[in-house]
Amino acid sequence: MMYGEEFKKIRIEKQLTISETASGIMSISLLSKFERGLCEITVSKFVKILDRVNVTLSEFELIVSNFQKSRMMQLLDELRESYLKKEYTKIEAIMANESALWKDTRHVRHRYNYIMFSIVYDELRDENTTSEEDIEFLTDYLFSIEDWTQYELILYGNSVAGIKFDAMMLLSNELIHKTRYFQNNSAHRKMIAQILLNSAIVCLMKDELEISLKFQTDVSKLLTSEHYLHERNVLNYLNGIYLYKKGEIIEGQQKVDAALSIFRKLDSDHLATNFSEFFEDMKKSKT
Image (tube, rainbow, N blue to C red; front, side, top):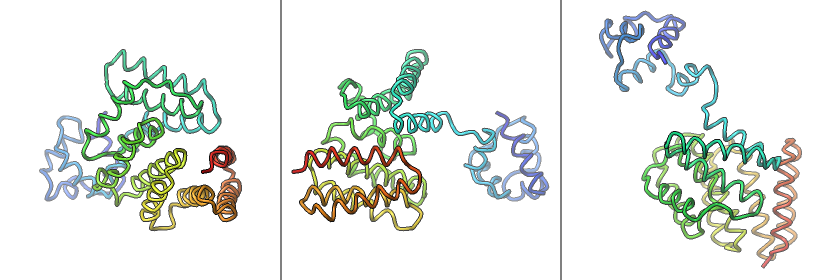
């Protein structure tokens, strides 16, 4: 990938000369060589010249990838759709591919991915086929990383239901600390909220009602703007289940029904169906 050549196209489109762009950052000759693909530059210099042309690093990444999502994001889109539609064979194919990549390349991320997909597959089928060894392998990795990036958030967020409850409790309680550098990023904040919501769901399933409420409260503190409408609706739904299981039947049912109604009005029919089925299961296990 010739980053310099792509940068040159952007600079010209922004109507900036090479001297204007390089001024105070690097020599004109160095920038010229970079744009022609004759040399590399340091990350700090690259970030500065991107700022000079008013382009963010994430925007540049989209440009050089021809506005295509990363492989991981494409996989997650496939997983999300297959999960909502309960398309088992598609998830099996994703798992088989990650397993083959792990065996062929020995890149450990493919093993992590496989374990994550396996846990989601188990959750969908209400089974426990993911090996203890694999779950411990993934859990050890998550504990070993002090500061999580998007990748760790993705791994954990999709694996919450399969990780041992005590480990899940520790990881979810440490989540704010492990992501402290990214909490001003709205995308990361949204992912953190979704993980805590998943943690609250697991607690409801295990009748750990007050712990679930604690995670719900944590989510409420994160959702400080009106931009997180989906997460707010899920939060109201979970709070309704909490109230129902605490014996406040009418109020709990009303909150759940209101949340499900909103999902249906937004044409999120698969989501509404899955949440409705989950609520019915929770009603059967009411303490």
